[in-house]
Amino acid sequence: MRCPYCNSEDTQVKDSRPAEDGTAIRRRRVCPDCGGRFTTFERVQLRDLQVIKKTGRKVPFDRDKLMRSFEIALRKRPVERERVERAVSGIVRRLESSGETDVHSDKIGLMVIEALKAIDDVAFVRYASVYRDFRDPKDFENVINELSAQINGGGGQED
Image (tube, rainbow, N blue to C red):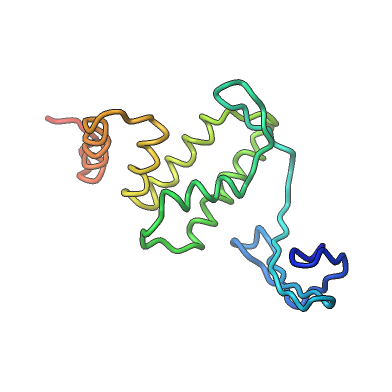
């Protein structure tokens, strides 16, 4: 593994341990040339996924971009990073095990919305506002009413 500080190709593993519920290995590394310390993660990758954007353009799937989406929606929310890691790993596993190599960005967005709804209502509304392209305050009201109906167990149906 190349050192991110000095580009030396001779780095040493100092510590390894399971991470992300055993789906990854976290390695602490040190560079003998510059003394720099950094962490790497090793994960199983079942297949190379391509994301089909709304424009039709294909781009390689980027786990870090998926993680950033969660982090932006969850900014300043009291949610443990480990819970977010599990959600992201779950989405990646579902995508990789689907058997498809090309995945529409809308499908990934729906998976993120599902996961955020289970993790944090505020983050869910934040993400939904971008994903569903809210243009009016009424759009927020509709999503909040939808959440309220689910929380109250009514599912929006009255007797």
